[in-house]
Length: 173
Image 1 (cartoon, rainbow, N blue to C red):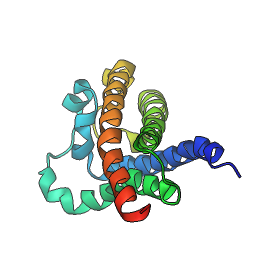
Image 2 (cartoon, rainbow, N blue to C red):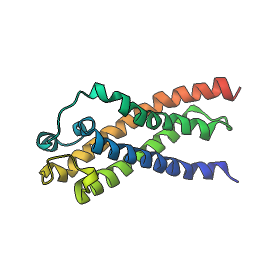
Image 3 (tube, helix red, strand yellow):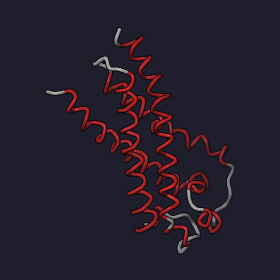
């Protein structure tokens, strides 16, 4: 059993699991609380959407329970993967970055380009703008992907540092 080979594969599996979690939550949010997700889409889609505006803060009791597991998954899975083997900070950081980027690529290709821009099933469309040209804006989603890639680097350094410090002080000593 070679731990290094296993780590080469597990970041893909962990990224795919995280992607599946995000897909489910995003589909629920688009269907039940479209006002939460509408700002993540092109302006033309935002302007043509027809749903009753709702105070997003009042929905937080429903939204946060959906998002908390998503936000805890990345540091949690990284802790799990590194708990038994002391590793340098950069290993932890790179692992987090790779898991994040697997999710980012799946989000771009599957959720944005295939589901949202091409197929557009009813559970992935907002009320109102069925024929809106913004649904075909592949460039908008690619720019979001690039922005998220930069965020992946920042999150990986910051959260990877916290995870590394926790592992070093509380687990590996």
